[in-house]
Image (cartoon, rainbow, N blue to C red; front, side, top):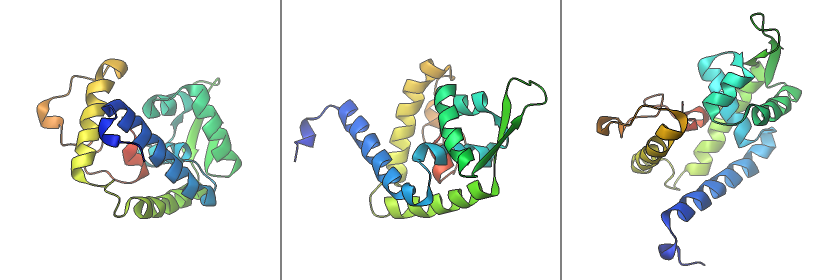
Length: 168
């Protein structure tokens, strides 16, 4: 086993993030969705129908990347896309009933994934939120984080579940 005490913080963060992503995807394969798909479904469930571009912006991925995720979700009946009446060049994406069932199953998977693993500690979540606020503010034109905001959720105070992992 490597000497984790010697690793720089950035390496610890990226390795931990990859391991969590892999663990998620290994379990989500049984319900036919990826972690990226769960995040997209969570945003649609929380915020309602929106364009692919808006969804990509909220999730902080490129529109093309979101398009691939949505194509997989649509082919499995988890989302629907209809032409946007206001802008015929775009489509409105919404969660389908099948997508809501997938989100419920993903919530169950998340509970078993993190049970006893320390991934739901308020202290860890708080530290991660501070890192995201500090590094995300200049990148995504967020207002500078205030010290009083350090313990609150990014977008949704008290939020939990797959959609709560998405910075707004």
